[in-house]
Image 1 (cartoon, rainbow, N blue to C red):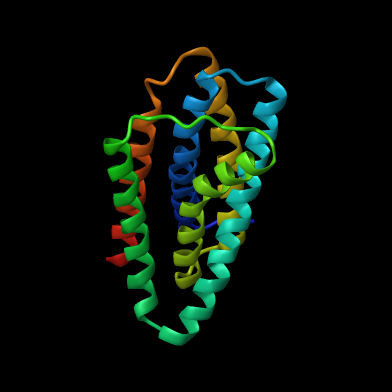
Image 2 (image 1 turned 90 degrees about the vertical axis):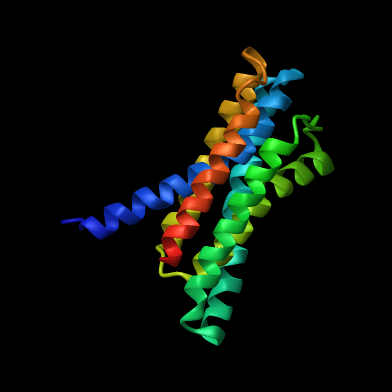
Length: 185
């Protein structure tokens, strides 16, 4: 099967956006890993965040698809704008805050942590519902990257420390802003 340049370009774009979204989870996970976390909890937290990185964009995509039918051509501008706003918010958070969260890896604490790092995925999913994007591929990549980067962040935090955490959120914000700009023009 011949895969065209457009499909490869879209795959790489979605992979980079998935990486950018996962960087938020990574940055917080580094700090959490610094306080010490068992390997069983690393797996549990990583899988939970991966599932949220699948579920939240799906909800966003459905909302975006519904609105796309209502507003037509302006949907692409809205979708690109949403990505840019998320990127700016991640940049602001990355420069503004040096504090690290302490995660309770059970029940409500885990749910709140997974929800908080997946809200960006919800809004990106919303914008992808407005754009002509392979949504199944996007959601799968979001979940995979969310899981992998969370696990990596927890393990890195356990062994190295928090020096990379704040920079990863800034990098994620720059990537989302750039792709939002790309979608608009």
